[in-house]
Image 1 (cartoon, chains in turn orange, brown):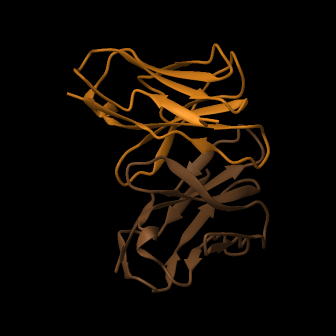
Image 2 (image 1 turned 90 degrees about the vertical axis):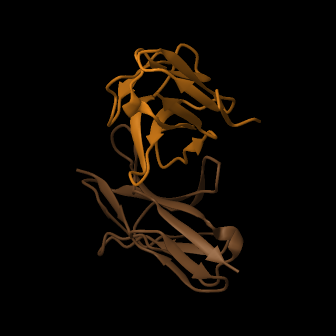
Amino acid sequence: NAGVTQTPKFRVLKTGQSMTLLCAQDMNHEYMYWYRQDPGMGLRLIHYSVGEGTTAKGEVPDGYNVSRLKKQNFLLGLESAAPSQTSVYFCASKRGQTQETQYFGPGTRLLVL
Amino acid sequence: GNSVTQMEGPVTLSEEAFLTINCTYTATGYPSLFWYVQYPGEGLQLLLKATKADDKGSNKGFEATYRKETTSFHLEKGSVQVSDSAVYFCALDLIQGAQKLVFGQGTRLTINP
C-alpha cells in the first residue's frame, strides 16, 4: 500500500495561473480532505468529501474548487492563483465516520509569485 | 465553536529531559482527541489518540490523558531524544457531524544532544 500520495511535490506559479493538485489513496477510504498549512496557524480545512461524487466546503474554501469523480482520487483546483495561496497543501483520508484516524499525504509546497 | 489551543513554541530541551506540551480544547459535542507529529519535510503522522473521557493514549513513550473536567489533552514524555525533534499538533474530531479535524497551531520541539 502506498497510502496517500500527492502530486506534484513542489510547484511555482505566477499570479493568475491555474493548476490542479492530485491526491490519491489506495486504502478504499470514504472520506478525503484538503488542508493548507501556514506558519503559526496549524492546518486549516479547505474542502472535504464524504464519498465519491460528494464535496463540501471547509473553513477556508474561497479560491479553491474540488472534485471527487473516483473514490480513490480527490483533486484540488486553483482557477486563478494568488500570492495568498502560497502554502503547503496536505491531503488526508480516513476509512469511515466514527473515531477514525486520518492518514496524511507528504504535502505539496506551492509558491505563487 | 470548536477550537484547540496549544502552548506556544518553540520548545527547546536537552536530551533525557521531561516533556510536557499543553493542549486545551473547546467543543460543543463529545470529541475524540489526537496528537499528530510532523517530522521535517514530511506529512503528519498520528502519534496517539483518545476517544472518551479518562482514556489514555500512548505511543513511542509519549502519553496523553483525555481530561473532560479541564478540557485538556496534554502530551508528556519522560525522557526525550534528539529523534523526537518535530512539530506536534493537537487536534479534535467530533463524532457527530462531518467528522472534521480541528487543529491547534502546532508546537515546534527541538531536542539538543
